[in-house]
Length: 278
Length: 307
Image (cartoon, rainbow over all chains, first blue to last red; front, side, top):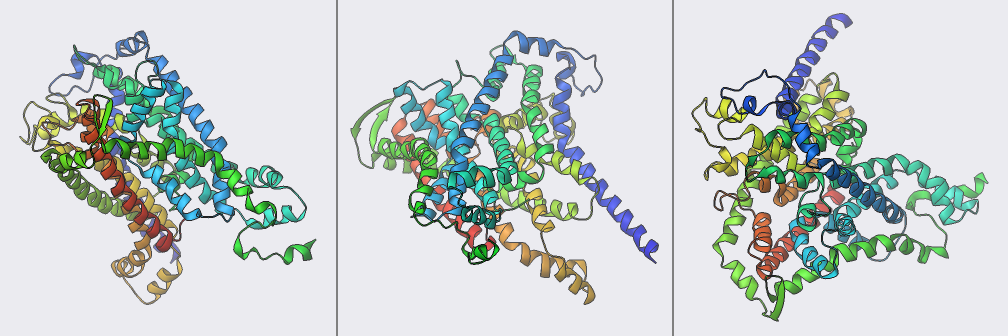
């Protein structure tokens, strides 16, 4: 009886699994295609009908290196690391405070944070550009770090607060009764429990900064040039360098690939600002 | 010790320590709030200031009241951009919603290997939008693009040019790209919701002999409604902001056929240097977003018990 039931159950699972696999394969095909273009010679790339087999070449890689794109990669990496670190340092206490303490006008403050997150970047880039031009922050590392605070700091506080609220408050109460000071409680009770949440949220911040285009393009672009900004620059007056674009695009994709596997459950929570616990 | 901790009522979820309580939380939020005032509130107020002044080519001159708004609101290009954004959002979001829900239901059917499939499905959503744009620029490139040549030309839909160069179809191509990028997000958020549903009602319904369709409409859907609303609303807000993919794929063209308010504001600022009018546009967009964001907050808080 049990066996007779498990067989159709197993074949149904197989059916839905194959449906999902086929769907994923079709959806991800463009990424594979771009990956193949990294080593595809130009004449094969533009061939009609589409050419699937070709002699791989490294010419696109050498062009990218010759034109110093590894510096843009380094800039991107440093910028994202520094701005994420700053977000974690000043955002963690704030998220904890919003989760645990009563404050005046807490709801309004909280809504202000949400509004910073939701604000369209295009609206921010206008005042940023003019203010930065006046105070000499245009095309500087510090300027972009500040600009990234608008969406990442607000995002971080908002999401980490939802992680804070999952912690049992009794532990903190017990520590308070032991006579621990509040900074001690935060450091020795809350922080260790919150570590996973902090890492997950910080990694998402890193990815948002990594993917950011508009600020980096308008407020940076020469001295401080990030990887996404370097992509449109491959549309040159002599034509579009597709193979090189594929190389840079895939490089920009690598950290994302790592992150989707490592963070899995936390991504949904992050992208829904903590509304859905993945 | 144990008896002492019993006297604390944990119900309120607030750490009590009477004397420090007043200033401690404000100290914790001070650096962040200060930072957000500088990078978010100040730019907003400055934009309002600019929108009431004559400002061209980076030079801010006279106070001119609502003139910038009057010019903007009589500009057909502004209304065109609203129309473009409305078309974009009203097609893309419902399609993503339906496909996402369908996908989530499939994923919920004890699909094997989810720990590999789920991350892979997330790729389009987590990628840099500029790379998403690049990907589809390649797939839909005129004449040699994989999709252009093998699908569009084969069915005589297009000859020799990219779909992004066509005034009639460019917007729909952008909608298609948005659907490709964001359906996974909807799907995996809904899937997370489905996984969190309690089993009890389904067992009871099975005992009563309900079929899967009845279960879906009478159990799943009602229980999922708040979540569906919150996710739909969030995506709705974000879809209005799309900039990067449109910028790299069409730049608002051909003509103004794909020019959303975001693209228009950017052009007004960095191409025409018409900063007063661009600021007026930014302020209007901003106010609309505050309204949306408030609705999102209230719905998520009340219906979903989130936050």
